[in-house]
Length: 326
Image 1 (tube, rainbow, N blue to C red):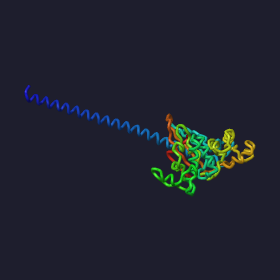
Image 2: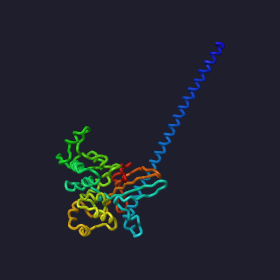
Image 3: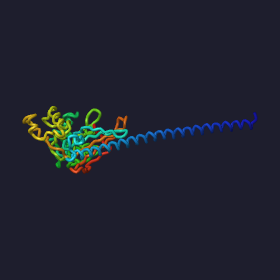
Image 4: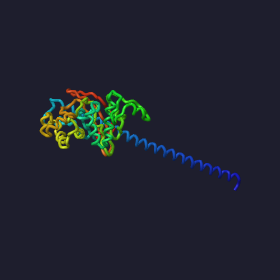
């Protein structure tokens, strides 16, 4: 073999290696683009499904408002009209829409516990709700006392409550508000409150569905209250709670005589915490949109005021909403 032929073979070998490396590099680039395209495709599909579920949830809010407005208009009430029977005690209503569905619940704000209207006496209703949902007696007492301290205007804390000296000693200090709560999310700042207590988890319900800052009422309207709230009222038995809950709507109990007939004179103590009111015009709508075959959904929560003529105004709107329809 001549020196020239050996050089040519060396050059041919180098060229072959270069081609192999170029092909390998191009293969890696192609595979990377394919993986990115696949990832982008999945992301696009996920975004599309999330967006569809969002619109389904928003459709649930609008349908709830429509049914409320229609059902509350006197001219639309008749014996065969089922839309006039929509309940405002967190009863779930599901509607199919295209390839998905939405489920909404409506709660009359007067049937919830207004944390801004709580006093040292009526705080027991929130305490009972917390304990019924899994908080210990000590945990519930700390939260209730701290809620009352948060919104009062003085600097003296209750036995288990907290004022500035507690909050300013935290790793990230802040001052107590000394004013009414503006939103329920504000409760997270209060001593003893956690996200699990407020929003719930796999093991317990969250109290967020059963409290409000919008009713302005010192007592709970039993004719609009979910059973969970009814069971938090002192002197309320499960039997009475079931009876009151089942009579929500057209057959609601509106006079003290009905209560007296069922529980006797103890109704007087019960009425320190509860009332027998009618429907209010401030309501919470919780809606979740689901695509067919999907276990998770998209939640929306709205608080509205509804006028007699069917017009409404949003007081609060959260999208997405944590813990919807728990």
